[in-house]
Length: 226
Image 1 (spheres, rainbow, N blue to C red):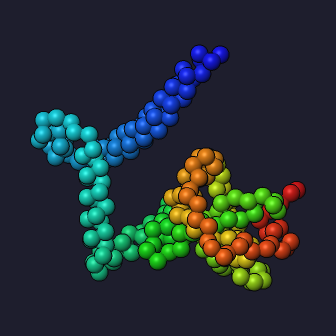
Image 2 (image 1 turned 135 degrees about the vertical axis):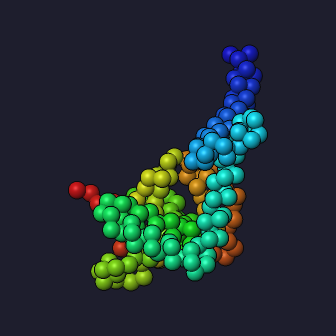
Protein backbone atom coordinates (compact mmCIF):
# COMPACT_ATOMS: atom_id res chain seq x y z
CA UNK A 1 0.00 0.00 0.00
CA UNK A 2 2.82 2.36 0.88
CA UNK A 3 4.52 1.69 -2.48
CA UNK A 4 1.42 2.85 -4.33
CA UNK A 5 1.11 6.07 -2.38
CA UNK A 6 3.92 7.94 -4.24
CA UNK A 7 2.59 6.75 -7.61
CA UNK A 8 -0.87 8.02 -6.78
CA UNK A 9 0.54 11.31 -5.59
CA UNK A 10 2.54 11.75 -8.79
CA UNK A 11 -0.53 10.96 -10.92
CA UNK A 12 -2.63 13.52 -9.08
CA UNK A 13 0.15 16.10 -9.38
CA UNK A 14 0.37 15.43 -13.12
CA UNK A 15 -3.39 15.79 -13.50
CA UNK A 16 -3.33 19.11 -11.64
CA UNK A 17 -0.81 20.34 -14.22
CA UNK A 18 -2.38 18.93 -17.38
CA UNK A 19 -6.14 19.28 -16.77
CA UNK A 20 -6.26 23.10 -16.59
CA UNK A 21 -3.71 23.35 -19.41
CA UNK A 22 -5.69 21.06 -21.74
CA UNK A 23 -8.99 22.78 -20.93
CA UNK A 24 -7.42 26.20 -21.54
CA UNK A 25 -6.01 25.11 -24.90
CA UNK A 26 -9.33 23.53 -25.86
CA UNK A 27 -11.31 26.67 -25.01
CA UNK A 28 -8.88 28.91 -26.88
CA UNK A 29 -8.90 26.57 -29.89
CA UNK A 30 -12.69 26.59 -29.92
CA UNK A 31 -12.88 30.40 -29.70
CA UNK A 32 -10.23 30.97 -32.34
CA UNK A 33 -11.83 28.39 -34.65
CA UNK A 34 -15.24 30.00 -34.22
CA UNK A 35 -13.91 33.48 -34.96
CA UNK A 36 -11.97 32.17 -37.96
CA UNK A 37 -15.34 31.29 -39.49
CA UNK A 38 -15.89 35.02 -40.01
CA UNK A 39 -13.27 34.84 -42.79
CA UNK A 40 -15.84 32.94 -44.85
CA UNK A 41 -17.76 36.20 -45.15
CA UNK A 42 -14.94 37.62 -47.25
CA UNK A 43 -14.57 36.91 -50.95
CA UNK A 44 -12.08 34.15 -51.69
CA UNK A 45 -9.64 36.64 -53.23
CA UNK A 46 -9.52 38.69 -50.00
CA UNK A 47 -8.99 35.84 -47.55
CA UNK A 48 -5.56 35.74 -45.84
CA UNK A 49 -4.70 32.26 -47.09
CA UNK A 50 -5.15 33.50 -50.68
CA UNK A 51 -2.50 36.23 -50.52
CA UNK A 52 -0.33 34.62 -47.85
CA UNK A 53 -0.34 31.21 -49.48
CA UNK A 54 -0.91 29.45 -46.16
CA UNK A 55 -3.67 29.24 -43.56
CA UNK A 56 -2.82 31.24 -40.44
CA UNK A 57 -4.99 30.44 -37.39
CA UNK A 58 -6.24 33.49 -35.55
CA UNK A 59 -6.74 35.81 -38.51
CA UNK A 60 -10.47 35.59 -37.82
CA UNK A 61 -9.83 37.02 -34.36
CA UNK A 62 -8.08 39.99 -35.91
CA UNK A 63 -10.95 40.47 -38.36
CA UNK A 64 -13.56 40.20 -35.60
CA UNK A 65 -11.80 42.75 -33.40
CA UNK A 66 -11.34 45.06 -36.38
CA UNK A 67 -15.02 44.86 -37.31
CA UNK A 68 -16.09 45.53 -33.70
CA UNK A 69 -13.71 48.50 -33.44
CA UNK A 70 -14.81 50.02 -36.75
CA UNK A 71 -18.47 49.51 -35.82
CA UNK A 72 -17.95 51.39 -32.55
CA UNK A 73 -16.02 54.11 -34.35
CA UNK A 74 -18.74 54.50 -36.97
CA UNK A 75 -21.69 54.50 -34.56
CA UNK A 76 -20.00 57.10 -32.33
CA UNK A 77 -20.89 59.87 -34.79
CA UNK A 78 -24.28 61.31 -35.69
CA UNK A 79 -24.57 59.56 -39.06
CA UNK A 80 -23.80 56.16 -37.56
CA UNK A 81 -26.29 56.67 -34.74
CA UNK A 82 -29.00 57.59 -37.22
CA UNK A 83 -28.31 54.49 -39.29
CA UNK A 84 -28.45 52.32 -36.16
CA UNK A 85 -31.80 53.82 -35.16
CA UNK A 86 -33.08 53.28 -38.69
CA UNK A 87 -32.05 49.64 -38.54
CA UNK A 88 -33.66 49.19 -35.13
CA UNK A 89 -36.93 50.66 -36.40
CA UNK A 90 -36.81 48.23 -39.33
CA UNK A 91 -36.26 45.29 -37.00
CA UNK A 92 -39.09 46.49 -34.75
CA UNK A 93 -41.55 45.74 -37.57
CA UNK A 94 -40.61 42.06 -37.67
CA UNK A 95 -42.62 40.30 -34.92
CA UNK A 96 -40.30 37.47 -33.80
CA UNK A 97 -37.03 39.27 -34.57
CA UNK A 98 -38.26 42.32 -32.66
CA UNK A 99 -38.74 40.37 -29.42
CA UNK A 100 -35.39 38.60 -29.64
CA UNK A 101 -33.41 41.70 -30.64
CA UNK A 102 -34.94 43.99 -28.01
CA UNK A 103 -34.38 41.44 -25.24
CA UNK A 104 -30.74 40.84 -26.18
CA UNK A 105 -30.10 44.56 -26.64
CA UNK A 106 -31.48 45.45 -23.22
CA UNK A 107 -29.33 42.80 -21.57
CA UNK A 108 -26.18 43.82 -23.47
CA UNK A 109 -26.79 47.52 -22.77
CA UNK A 110 -27.12 46.73 -19.07
CA UNK A 111 -24.05 44.49 -18.89
CA UNK A 112 -21.66 46.52 -21.04
CA UNK A 113 -22.78 50.04 -20.20
CA UNK A 114 -19.85 51.92 -18.56
CA UNK A 115 -22.15 53.39 -15.92
CA UNK A 116 -24.16 50.23 -15.34
CA UNK A 117 -24.22 48.42 -12.00
CA UNK A 118 -25.21 44.97 -13.25
CA UNK A 119 -22.81 42.27 -12.07
CA UNK A 120 -20.49 44.87 -10.59
CA UNK A 121 -20.92 43.69 -6.97
CA UNK A 122 -20.63 40.29 -5.32
CA UNK A 123 -23.03 39.76 -2.45
CA UNK A 124 -23.58 37.27 0.35
CA UNK A 125 -27.21 36.23 0.71
CA UNK A 126 -29.12 33.59 2.62
CA UNK A 127 -30.27 31.00 0.07
CA UNK A 128 -32.26 28.79 -0.27
CA UNK A 129 -33.27 28.93 3.41
CA UNK A 130 -32.29 30.87 6.54
CA UNK A 131 -28.88 29.90 7.85
CA UNK A 132 -27.61 28.78 4.42
CA UNK A 133 -25.43 31.31 2.62
CA UNK A 134 -24.35 31.63 -0.98
CA UNK A 135 -22.83 34.18 -3.33
CA UNK A 136 -25.03 36.33 -5.54
CA UNK A 137 -24.55 39.30 -7.87
CA UNK A 138 -26.37 42.59 -7.82
CA UNK A 139 -28.14 43.26 -11.11
CA UNK A 140 -29.96 46.50 -10.30
CA UNK A 141 -33.12 47.68 -8.61
CA UNK A 142 -36.74 46.59 -9.18
CA UNK A 143 -38.63 48.56 -11.79
CA UNK A 144 -42.02 48.86 -13.39
CA UNK A 145 -45.16 48.02 -11.45
CA UNK A 146 -43.11 45.76 -9.15
CA UNK A 147 -41.97 48.85 -7.22
CA UNK A 148 -45.57 49.64 -6.27
CA UNK A 149 -45.89 46.32 -4.45
CA UNK A 150 -42.61 46.36 -2.51
CA UNK A 151 -42.30 48.22 0.77
CA UNK A 152 -38.81 49.44 1.58
CA UNK A 153 -35.45 49.50 -0.17
CA UNK A 154 -35.12 46.47 -2.44
CA UNK A 155 -32.44 45.38 -4.88
CA UNK A 156 -32.43 42.81 -7.68
CA UNK A 157 -29.91 39.99 -7.41
CA UNK A 158 -28.92 36.97 -9.46
CA UNK A 159 -28.15 33.76 -7.56
CA UNK A 160 -26.07 31.52 -9.88
CA UNK A 161 -25.90 27.75 -9.72
CA UNK A 162 -22.68 25.75 -9.55
CA UNK A 163 -20.64 24.70 -11.45
CA UNK A 164 -22.58 26.34 -14.31
CA UNK A 165 -23.22 29.98 -13.33
CA UNK A 166 -25.22 30.70 -16.50
CA UNK A 167 -28.21 29.11 -14.79
CA UNK A 168 -29.65 30.56 -11.62
CA UNK A 169 -32.43 32.51 -9.94
CA UNK A 170 -33.53 36.12 -10.19
CA UNK A 171 -34.63 37.38 -6.78
CA UNK A 172 -35.66 40.74 -5.31
CA UNK A 173 -34.59 41.12 -1.68
CA UNK A 174 -34.31 43.96 0.85
CA UNK A 175 -30.98 45.70 0.67
CA UNK A 176 -30.54 45.00 4.39
CA UNK A 177 -30.79 41.23 3.73
CA UNK A 178 -27.51 41.05 1.79
CA UNK A 179 -23.87 41.66 2.64
CA UNK A 180 -21.64 43.33 0.07
CA UNK A 181 -18.40 41.38 -0.26
CA UNK A 182 -14.93 42.81 -0.71
CA UNK A 183 -14.45 40.42 -3.60
CA UNK A 184 -14.19 41.04 -7.33
CA UNK A 185 -16.72 39.50 -9.69
CA UNK A 186 -13.95 37.34 -11.21
CA UNK A 187 -13.01 35.99 -7.80
CA UNK A 188 -16.64 35.27 -6.98
CA UNK A 189 -17.18 33.43 -10.29
CA UNK A 190 -14.07 31.30 -9.73
CA UNK A 191 -15.33 30.50 -6.24
CA UNK A 192 -18.72 29.43 -7.61
CA UNK A 193 -17.45 27.46 -10.61
CA UNK A 194 -14.90 25.59 -8.48
CA UNK A 195 -17.66 24.70 -5.98
CA UNK A 196 -15.74 26.44 -3.22
CA UNK A 197 -12.39 24.81 -3.95
CA UNK A 198 -10.69 27.96 -5.30
CA UNK A 199 -11.29 30.37 -2.43
CA UNK A 200 -10.32 34.03 -2.83
CA UNK A 201 -7.86 35.69 -0.49
CA UNK A 202 -9.07 36.54 3.00
CA UNK A 203 -10.00 40.24 3.30
CA UNK A 204 -11.70 40.67 6.66
CA UNK A 205 -12.70 44.26 7.28
CA UNK A 206 -11.42 45.38 10.64
CA UNK A 207 -14.12 46.34 13.11
CA UNK A 208 -16.96 45.33 10.83
CA UNK A 209 -19.18 42.46 11.88
CA UNK A 210 -21.83 40.74 9.84
CA UNK A 211 -25.21 42.45 10.42
CA UNK A 212 -27.91 40.58 12.25
CA UNK A 213 -30.72 39.20 10.12
CA UNK A 214 -34.35 39.61 10.99
CA UNK A 215 -36.74 36.79 10.29
CA UNK A 216 -38.67 38.69 7.64
CA UNK A 217 -35.70 39.48 5.34
CA UNK A 218 -34.51 35.88 5.73
CA UNK A 219 -37.66 34.66 4.10
CA UNK A 220 -37.23 36.88 1.07
CA UNK A 221 -34.61 34.61 -0.46
CA UNK A 222 -36.51 31.37 0.10
CA UNK A 223 -37.95 29.61 -2.95
CA UNK A 224 -41.65 29.06 -2.82
CA UNK A 225 -42.68 25.57 -1.74
CA UNK A 226 -45.81 24.36 -3.39
